[in-house]
Image (cartoon, rainbow, N blue to C red; front, side, top):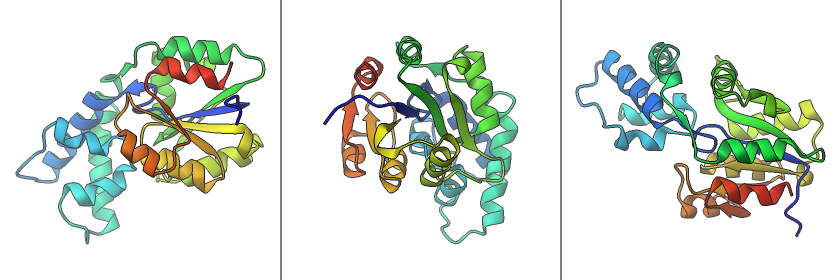
Length: 221
């Protein structure tokens, strides 16, 4: 099977940027606002990096039966901190900018962002690191949660950009990226420098594994 694709869809958190500080601080802020007595440490919250936050708050609060409105309140508190401070508490992974620049330089390849993070935040982050213009399109969720599900987001991108699934590859660090790709008959590459394990990624359907950002160059050249 050829490892050359015409379209590469990149997750953002854990794949292009390391968002640990900003995301975990924002969650801690939200939990404090919601009256939690015991606030998890930053390391204890890394499992929240990737999945839609509205699905994580019931687990964080230890209540699977909480009302959707209550979980959304946690997301709203999260955004209070994140929009002002957390959005800047991240950094690019080593070599990822060089990799993206090389991939974007190929006339036979298009690269996109496919993130569960709200598009408005993704755009701000990409512009801050001066890599926004490398992408043919930036797709994230809406503030109301639309497209926070990775499978639905990828489906939307395929339709919007008129992509052919077998010519496209999803690249991400969590199972949601792999499952989202598989649901849309697209292959996926899991990256090990993010927050998912090789076991998680392969179990979820990863066809390829990348240990470093430079490993991703094989998909475009």
